[in-house]
Length: 291
Image (cartoon, rainbow, N blue to C red):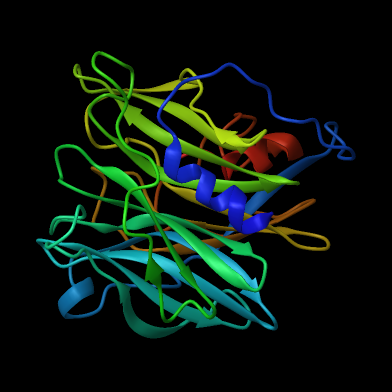
């Protein structure tokens, strides 16, 4: 059933109206604060990651954290692997996914993806295809090191004059039993960007109308974020917004009360603001779904 639900995402060609299932639990009255670490936890290297490292997607496998992150060498985006026991000290293992110019992926990108446990292996939805019209692909791996790609895109741009006609990108996958739900960015011919959702449900995968707009322009102006739950905290790995500086990856912990200890990525919002340093618990969870 799990594999069938993943494969259903290879046929996302139509739109439908639907609602996400409600989830029990949670306390919307709780508030949290992020405590950003003063230095990046993953920085640029040489060669394939010499320009940028960003867009981390972290999953736990046993006692280890696996970070499938994106890196840019000035011409091509790749996906790399780093591992850690605590989320602060990372060991890099080099690139694990690169675009194949002999296929639909072209030569620009195989990165900016979302990892999720799928039974006894990992699923990694990623951006690939021509730079001017990206698509989403899917790769699987037992350990995050050897990734096996599906031969076709799992999500193509939408039909003529649709809201995602000119590209789909920046996926974020979640699992609500028994289905997968894939949040993604879509772009129309006017270069307006919106958030979309493609579920695998009721035996067929569908695309929904756009959920939200992210403004005009091909490069998102917000940071890419990822949030993972823990017994008493959530951990957030983030890249700074485009247009600010060359990207690296930082980390912050989310607890009941955490004073801010300094920032290498962007200035703190004013006291009492509703920015990312002061969020209700429900909003903190949503932060991990937005690109």
